[in-house]
Length: 241
Image (cartoon, rainbow, N blue to C red; front, side, top):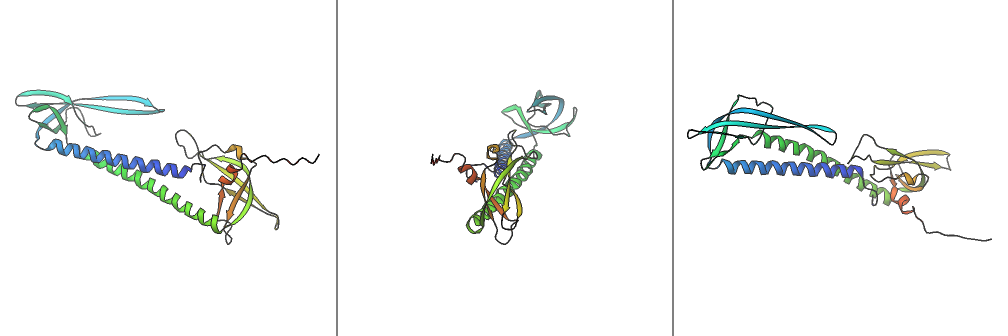
């Protein structure tokens, strides 16, 4: 669609971007940890405290954990905040930490699981997003073929449905319900447009072009742009008074 943003395409792009960003973050963390480990020494530390911070954002409850460890280097005791947390940690647990001799107060734990989890998380989002994008591209190709070879019929937008199962930035997509009457046979056909994010309630009652496969009327494309383009037609008045 040209003027109405496709909901499925937006979802696909968002998922794909999230997946790519998460994978890049995991790669950055892995590279940073690898550089830190160069020339670093290890020692055993004891988890002395795990602070839990719960807060609400966008109507959802989130939880952060701050893990504090105590360890000894060259006879001196240090207590500091660790760089990560996982659900298996508990107060009193001994874990291996890494530090540089010139800065023993800065330690990191073995956080192999975190980058792996992020990569898997990113791949899942990327695959889902890619599936949406590829699927949308195929639909666009089919729509283009119908525009070129399909039979164009005129329908009327009788209603606008809100797709409540999908939500993007707090908004639900819309789709137009179209009725096409075949006056030759007396038959009626009902079609629906692709999901769009634009509010298209104002199109109810408007005429719209529907391109139907000549051999299979169940394959069709509702060209909402034809209705959008006719939203403000040039005024033509023929006054014969």
